[in-house]
Image (tube, rainbow, N blue to C red; front, side, top):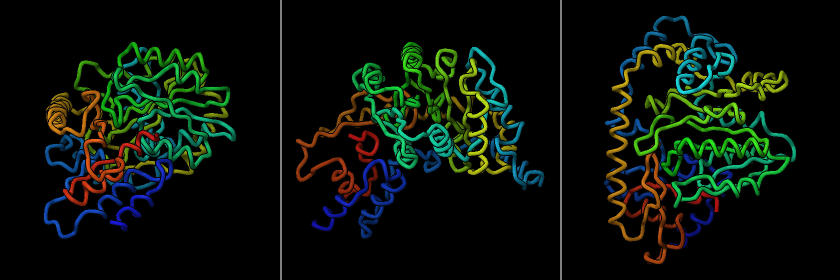
Length: 381
């Protein structure tokens, strides 16, 4: 027991540990003598479950690109032009203006898009506004780039909406950007058009860039339809981050993008663009043959594939929400309506010998071989 307590206390803080890092610690705490298969519910990898499988169109496009032997070399810094064009056209479908290929930069998954964005915005003495709860990678990347992190709260009783008054109180002349995750990770919320418009107006008032994390874009199965933040790009400049990972169920392909939703050109100064190009030169990008497959993947994937994924997510979300109601020590403040995650509240007063969410997760892993993430790693309280 003492060793277990020591292990729990030795866990790093939210801003210097990754999700994979905490998952590794939890997996290491499972009982090796327990013959039950470990149920891992801690990471958004749909491929871990056989019911989620990408479309044949995507697989065949990658195979064809690889077998052609035309894409074994380096790609241009920003990505292959046909792939950039296809992504620009794909995202433009939902916007009141048209994106161009020059607005799109390909990245090795959305995680690299986060890293690049924060790196090019970082300056000595600057700060960034991050949502709480949110995705831990933002805090980690910001800390590495010496950006001061200021957390604004999401309000669970209002569908995890942004506390805009808190945002205004936190921001100052040194604030470079605010991050919006929609559909929400880990909260499972989907923002309305009206709320996104208020966010854009607030960003305009404060003079900050919006970083819109839309890696779960279009994975909405509740009352609110998905609306991209780029719709409001004429109000405040938006840097949209996304990928094939979730909607096409291929996180291992590492094909992401960083897109300038900036019809007024606020972000397109020569210095900013040059900084972006230099940083993508340093980082490299996704595999060239995966990039080559992108136009076919985007243009030929049938809507029935997307509907099937949405239906499965809604079904599993409904089951999860109803089952949580049967567990007295856990409640869900908001039924998930999007993404692949849900945030729940743990009532420690109803549990014996449980001191925190971390303690609960470690004991759950050891006693039941079930892996879930402690809330502190997304809430940073």
